[in-house]
Image (tube, rainbow, N blue to C red; front, side, top):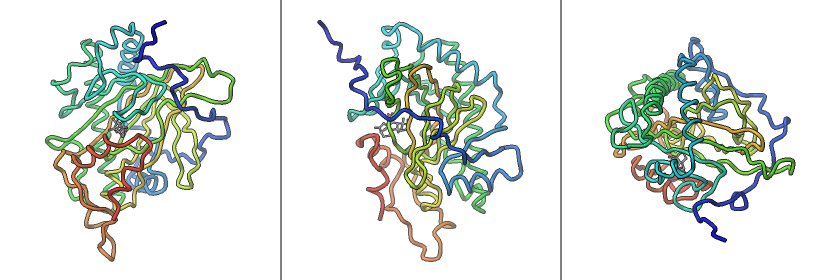
Length: 326
Ligand code: GA4
């Protein structure tokens, strides 16, 4: 019998306790981006959870729906066709293997480079014109949302947007990444009380991430007391995460939130995530306005390029910020 090294089975994937209805997070902060209270609500959620749900964000349902259908169509292609869009690193199609150091999850995905407002011209994946068009339309829209959210964060912290570098994610040479994930149902574990890990626990290295899913649940976040809670899914909303770099910019005031995805045993989950990172040479250090009385940064100085390199040398679940703590 020939065992293909490129198709690890579920026994290579770490397991998690299956979520039950009691795990649903009842305290989810929901921010209406069109409301005057949004900046304060965003800053408050980022301090308490590093995470919030965003509604009234202005991205048309069509833009979200088109990308979802194109992604479903892509992931339904024969495996050999999808593999032609691989490997995942630096950019392209990947399956089950996450990062470069042996992490595995019950998913397949596309990891894509974003250039100014759209997919990088240098990245030929995906080759389908309709999928590329849907991606570009969605990315341009979600990127605007990311900038509005960063501006609101600054306002909520009482800092002028220009000083808070909310433009970092759109600055010349900014390092933006987009990922489309497909978590197939893991039928093999149905009824066993455990589930396959879709994407293992981690914090995002970037400034922020903006996620949307098809409405199949699976996303969990860790509260500050370490308790894992399930995020009730909502296909019309975005879910915003604070990343490690934003935690540093705010000198620890905003919390980079640990999160993970549990694969469903019955339904497919599709998610699309925009990761806003700064330019490689950008220095990541606390904003002077947030240094407080002592004026001390909690972190050693580093550039985004240095942090990203350290991230790719780490395992998914490692605490990447720990090595930059003073
Ligand atoms: C987590 C956030 C983004 O999905 C990502 C991931 C990246 C990858 O999948 O290649 C990483 C992971 C993420 C953090 C640590 C490293 C890098 C896998 C991994 C083990 C695209 C990113 O930028 O960092």
